[in-house]
Length: 466
Image (cartoon, rainbow, N blue to C red; front, side, top):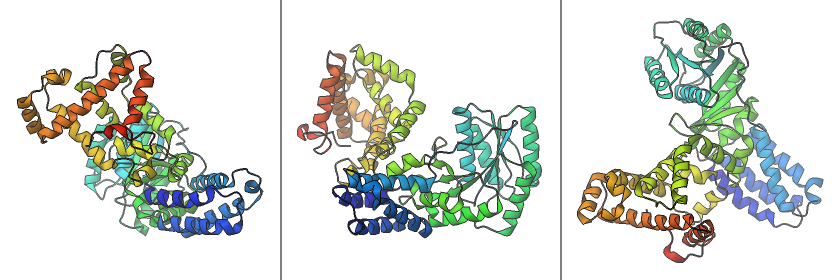
């Protein structure tokens, strides 16, 4: 998300960072470029006008003229105004109610509503330790009821059954009554969607809302619909007392206009953002972190939080102790490190959150993320095709074994050779780590493997190709 906008803005803002003084004349061109970048990102026109005017007013005022680094202050102003448009800070769900707290999910068909119910249920169960019940009041699509039942099982929350011949209000009320008896903390109610906003749909969801009186009414909207996302959100906001927005499919939208428009147009905060199809791909929406990512500054805080949640701490600790004791780095260890990286969203997910990595990729200084991702999958397949003995002692892998491993993993013998070579390099590095002063040596070794421009000297040929 935001790739195109990040590219345009970072190139544009470079032109002002070296300015000794900012005037209306020398930022005119920059502001024009910023305006074009936002419009190309499908940001709603009223939002673009408000944003550019606010930046201009602050940039030519006292705030910048007194600074020793006006250009840097200008970038800071752009970041702060981006944050302001998107809502200042993350707004959490307000579940302060007599249990069960009821959350109603609304939105058009195809926006990812049912999947978002499951993702949110998982988040509430795992992070907030809530006992969650999910129910579908979508009587027009029996497949949606079945889908929610399957997803509920996957995310390990309770499902309340319903059928197409029931009334949506009666379904929701029966689920809430059940939740009270079973002491559930939260009930998530999935509702019917349409392909477009229509009177019947609005009447039904208003009736449902009035009957169950939810503490949170969340509008689920597809980020890939661009400006239409803000327009649709406004239509729902006009008839329902929305408390927030869940922006879905953000991983498929390179422009990001919806994220910058929805809050301004509706006045409702984006509370969560969907960043993938898997049930764990839901993140709290932090405007300040998103603004940093837009400007190529990365989002290290989110990366750390993700690591805290997704890395298997026991395995990581055992691995660290094993390396410290100098017991060697075998192929099973290698496979576990690949799996940990996959849990973190893979190479692309991690690079997206590291400062400056987006631009480095565009400059050809970082291997293409998709190619690296494919390489990791290939390496894991090769290791999976080995016996436990081969993983713990790669030296026993002879020519005939390589042929068997290549055949089993759908790869070539040269791919197996490349993996073994890469493992050997990593094992040497890990061995250095276990010796006195090893960390410094290892960092120097890694630096030598990096390409020029990323702290490396370019010697040593770089990382093995995927």
